[in-house]
Length: 535
Image (cartoon, rainbow, N blue to C red):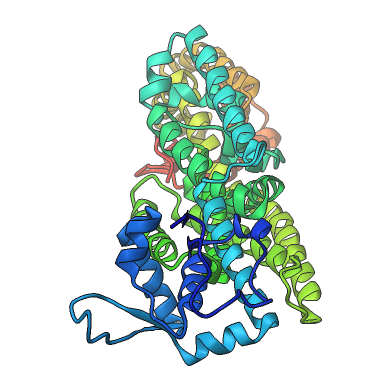
């Protein structure tokens, strides 16, 4: 007796010749195992099929035979038959539905095609039937990420901070390196460098960040490449990356304080794309494989949700990437020719793709605008550090001297009648003012020469210059008044009054600007407010 490993026993079955709808011997080699078993069960009709005997004679694993029969049983094509001669052995027969299937050649061919699709789809998703060049786009993106990280490592090595670059991504000393390799932050976005919303997905903060995202990209990218095509990976990666960073900056602007980087938003978009494909094509997978992947996807969803809630992680960036990837995948699935004849599918697919593209462009615009307040805060802190190095200490000294020499001494003397002033005290006040005025002029010139980045601190510096200039003019008039004594013409008293009023107005303007910036000061009116603390 000859053993046919493709279908069972090679001898004619008890039921006679194979029906016309059965596959030819040439096509029989490509049949799925479910087809093999069902053909064998049908070939034994009106007799019964003995699974254990079939497994022993054909050399197939008995567990595989039983699992396949169980699937056929769930489809209603086979059922268990009681054999009095073999009460302890499983015996299988063809159901009425199974007999009707073989009686209809069209339905049988359709069933065979569905089994072939299930087999091929499952093998392609699992990578058991690899095709050259299928995942080239995933590898291309990964190489770009690695090359960009290596470039950053080289720059960090040249700056002597390679260890920090690999291990401590939060250090401010690394900002310049990250900026050079494409990271996004509030300042650069506010300046109009919108392309950083895309380039930042190729930047990673440290080795751990790089390894985690590399594993995610290689895993889900390969799945999307096999099931939807390598070009889809590129499209989803780019659109989801823009959606992710745009979402993060627009609705979580404080995340731009230390910079934005990482491909996690794009990876979430790829995961959303694969999830949609899985939900619409799981019927084409082996049930066991579909169940296993469904469990894995649920675990991944829980894991990503947990990571998104961690401090320092842009959860909204992950959400935005998933939304962008889902829109692209939905559009492509609607446009795909999978046998559906609904006339609305092309329109719906085109609409989804347009929403994905237009939404990404809108997020670029809103993100650059949303970054402006955070950029101003960041620049204010940098400007405050610059002012506190030398300019503010000089200003504080000038303020103390102004209070001592002018407000507490020279001004009260000037307000007295010029015929009743103490001549010795007036001479002393003149000497003090002559020594103080040059020092105040130097402070004034230093403040005029400072170049600040933030708009708010620039306005504060302008108010400080106006105040110093007004006080310089007032001190000069006071010195002249006290020096001339009785010879000072009364008609010029209005000049002194106007200069004193200008000082008061300049002081109020400085005070208002300081309050706008939220300077940590107990008495802004006396100009003793340090500018190092910005809310």
